[in-house]
Image 1: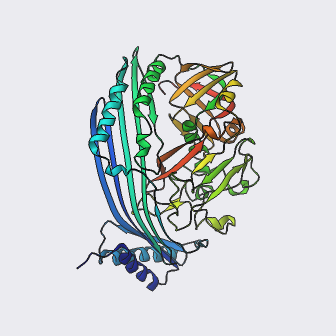
Image 2: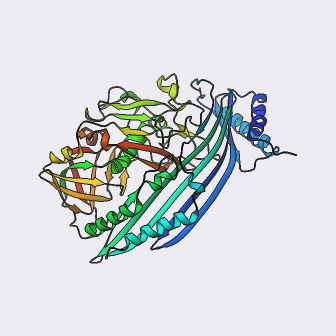
Image 3: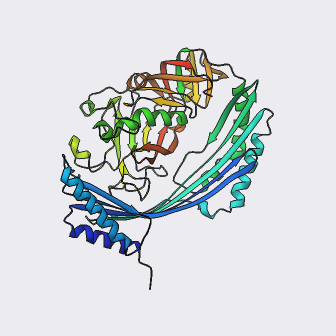
Length: 485
């Protein structure tokens, strides 16, 4: 007897949903494979290959949701889980105060496959471990480097989505990333410097093109310089922020506030709500005229560019901030109608088969300007150039924040001079973005993504990419964060 196909499992679930009188239902079947190789101090510390397969059924009954999931794919389990989702939806409907109304979406039939040249799962393990070992050797060639690390990560998601409305979508999605870090020791102090490829939806060519050995040499040199660098003097500085650093600043102070469920107060337990309440749309000055933030879930290789979201809505491109004015949210089919939108923008995603999808940050990027990076720096009398990610903190409404970074250089009279350490800047979100008076042009644009964006209870990890060119911010308050580097 042949093994039933995923489509046959889906047909079983949708038949139960149709018979229940529910107005909507869908099933997601997902098979995920992940490889993570971690090196530490010239040795391979761990190699983890994991596989996770299962399905989730979502049901809307009389305006209330029900969801159930299982890791057992069988002809007996699928109807049982569908019945459980229906039962939960009916129970929810009996106590619901407000009924869910879904924004309409055309029926889609499609297959989405990540383009790649080299499948990362086909690359011999020895080749990958050799790369990490050689990278760590280069890191520790520099006297004064006390610790080294390097890692490679890859994931493939094969997924089927079928809804009661007739949408039928198949996915074969890849993503990868690599990084290395050197930690220097001097005078009883430690300082680290890292190189990270972006997380992108592409093949192993991302790693092959990154030139880890060259980057490792640079990282080691800068770690040595950083550990010997003077701590910053607190005060007001002009800041020039590189794209990798900006990706985190955008994510926390722009991405999360633009999630409509937060703005409506539906999401509060995990990382709070949003100061961008709905009456501000179209009239609130979020930033200067140089600040144009665009959500683009269609750009190739970016993490949220999956073709369709987990509502079965086609991925789209739209404005979040235009010439400094807040104009748009990230939405799903449930919340879009609450602000008069006729269609979801396609930002409903779950982190796997076992969780119900929710509104997630889109690929939100800062649009390029017209300057060069050197021109941005040249117009700074006293400032700091910041690269990479560091510590951060932001309040429950995404309003007050502070950010660190991975590397800092003092700018004096239009020139980068020497490195600094322990730099933390803080501010209020709209005041900070209104202090932006220049963005570098498209030739400096880079993309960096996140795969650990936390939201929801039970918690889920969201994936998205934030692109930017370097940008300049005037008179930002900087403090000394002891041990922050």
